[in-house]
Image (cartoon, rainbow, N blue to C red; front, top):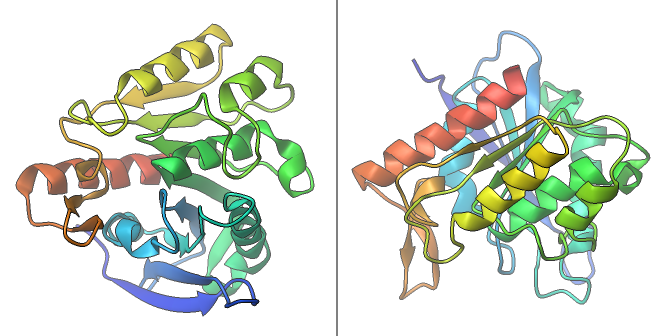
Length: 244
């Protein structure tokens, strides 16, 4: 049975021009310290609400989920915002009842490559690596927004601990075709990297429990049964990675 959750908004950076906000989803009455999940949204300025439904569903599995804003239109493509949120969670997770040593970094769309990048670049945060990473409907042959380096190229040169990788990609995704995750899985398998790909029958928005609204130009919560089913599966896979 899903656990009741609560959400709190905090500032994870200061300006200028304005602080970057971060939503913290967590069990309403946790029985113990929880794993931590850092969940990054996709392309666009400060779009954390797009992954809100997925964050809430993930938190209902007994996890603390941190969802920061970041701006893909910033001069560095969002790198400073992403790394600042990563550092914030590492330094402040305990204050929210979460264990920073049990951190899973997940991301959707442009956030997917950013999440994968954290597993391939231990220098990103003082040599600290996440417990696992989850890439949702992503591309991995472009520079990761978190590192500035291409995950496929980093993979070929990676040494040290091999962080488990979970890939999730809808088979009906026409925005970012599923073959991109299949190709990345093949590269991971060639390196004997611990990895798995899950392919729900949904599109780019449905995999995070949303639908694209063309009038708003963004993804919004949906009641579509297929999207809800797919999004719940995504949340369950994130939880499994965190609780393994």
